[in-house]
Structure formats: structure tokens, C-alpha cells
Image (cartoon, rainbow, N blue to C red; front, side, top):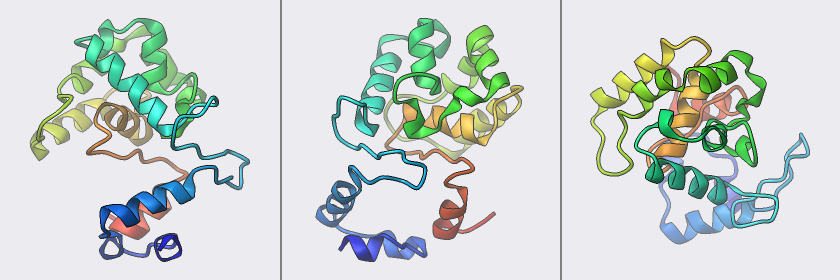
Length: 173
């Protein structure tokens, strides 16, 4: 099963039952990328995708606004520290870091529009993304990182490393 899904060519090929999808995820755990980065999906002393999601979800549940989060939690949500690179390593973007550290209220105006659960209408997503793109230093990588860690049930991060594969599967616009 995993071999069939390892080279997905179109969105039509990713309609699978839950057991096959779970097997695919399990097969990726521990995989070493060309960069030497080890993919960790499940709980691990080095951190993992699920631990990152749990940390971010806890931060969003505890604080009513991104701007209200303490600096250490904002840095986790923004991808500066810990296992942040699981949804995009944002610690390399100077202007992004300055905005998160010095003007989190600018990000909060956009990100706080997205509720932690429930359905989202496309107009609300578009409003959030449009206003996020207007912030200096916030691009598609930063915007989709924030959306992904707030609503991992609906979004995925888009960055230079995965953009070609996303375009291949979902098509290009």
C-alpha cells in the first residue's frame, strides 16, 4: 500500500481508506530525508509532528489571542524553537521573526479570525490570508504555518521545500 501512495501524481490517487492512510503515516515515521532530517510523527524525545500540534493547540486554547500568548509560546507557534521545523522552519526569516516578536498584534488581527474548531467559510479564510500577506515579512510559508498549527484538521503548510509536490498533487494556480 505505501508504495502506491509514495509517488502520488494527482489528487484522485489520494482517496484511501483510513487503515491504508494510517499505514502510510506509520511507514514515514523514522524516515531520513536527504537533508539528514528524521521524520518523527509520533511521540519522541526529539519531538514530533503530533507533539508540535499538541503544543500549539494547547497555546491557542489557553490564550484568546496570538498576541496574548507569552513570548515562549508565540515562538513555538511561529516555528522558531523546539521541533518547529515540522511545519516550516521559520527561524531563518529575519523580518518574520521581528514581526512575531515586536508586533504580534498585527498577526493576531488575522490569525484570531480563525476559530479552533467548526466549519470555516472560504471568505473567512481568504480574509485571514489576505490580511496576513499585507504584513511585512509574512509570506505563504508563514501564513500557512500559522493556519496549519491552529487548524491542522484543515490546512497544510506550503513552503519552498514542498510547493512542487503540492502543485503536482493538487494542480497549479
